[in-house]
Length: 251
Ligand SMILES: [Fe+2]
Ligand SMILES: [Fe+2]
Image 1 (cartoon, rainbow, N blue to C red):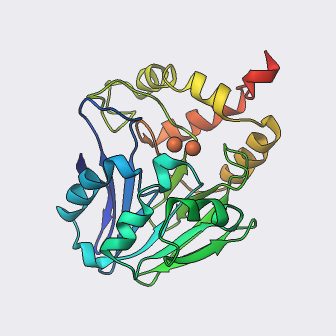
Image 2: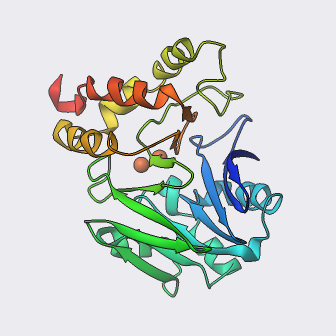
């Protein structure tokens, strides 16, 4: 795993920790936000990839700078590393959907510091900067949040925008090929089935798209696959708008 810079302005940075090698588990991106010397883990990942995430992270920030972790939903590829992080640093505050707290506790670390996120969302402060929890319920989990950094114009979209790409892929959609629309078409081939099958609700999708269209976003950062930048952000929202999801019963 290695770290790549997504955004930087002064003492404010977003990193993506991503895998380019052959793998035994589903490929997952872990993001890291840095603000004024404090860091937050964003969807810290599964138990299986913990050593690789920790070492990629330690190359770019001091592990002791991690103050918070954000967990978009309950899945193991996102939250099963929680007890390992907690064993390294019991001071980390875990921002998790309140609805999932009793389930996430099954990963262990009953003593971890949990801060439940209510259904309507909220904010967390990192190094003096506010990060917003944006409700994205049923996309795909019943209680599900994304993380928006208005200053960086970075929107972490969890499983929305995910693509299951072959090993060795670029972390950027628009840098895979010279033309951003061609790069988008190429990427979306690896996204279509994932969204049709894993996303359960057309109504929830429409509600989310209507809210997210109001936000100023330069980088749409999914938990699997490549990052959408610039015009590919709107291109993704338009594509998702036209897609019918919930395919296990709508076929
Ligand atoms: Fe998931
Ligand atoms: Fe996922």
